[in-house]
Length: 162
Ligand code: DLZ
Image (tube, rainbow, N blue to C red; front, side, top):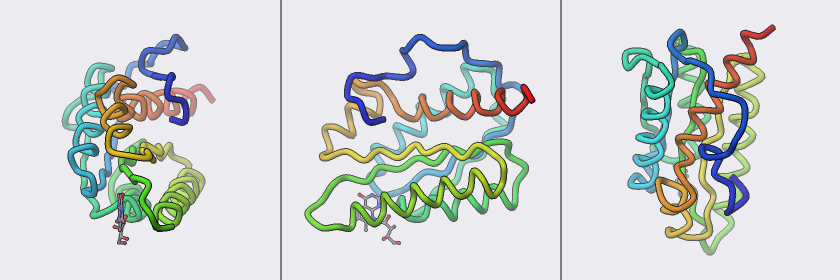
């Protein structure tokens, strides 16, 4: 997500495996909801386009990106999803709040991957401003929710390759 020029959904790479047999959880932040709703739509559309069944996609909301880790943990603990996609948008502000939230959610999500041995995808935008967020939520740099969904599918196929 760091490069302005990269749009994973358009990049050439390995083909996206079929997702029909997998269950997905999506947890999205209500902060910057116009952005996170667009990310969620992108993720859901991408899952469906790659074969996932609508009934195998569970979505939940959390108040802010800081809460994404616990929301994802609830999904891992209380449901049988194979992978979880965390979607948020933290816009750089004038205080260090941005750093605390980003650091916390990045660490929380990383820990959940290892704790549950499941893909927990970091679909959190960390733009400098609203326009950069719009550009990455269905705008000129694609939809990072779409990328997060493809990452989840590819990680599940990787697991199944062992
Ligand atoms: C408090 C806060 C601020 C200032 N900015 C954002 C933001 O840009 N994006 C986001 O997802 N959440 C933000 N929050 C809310 C925190 O994530 C969290 O919900 C609160 O600190 C309560 O734990």
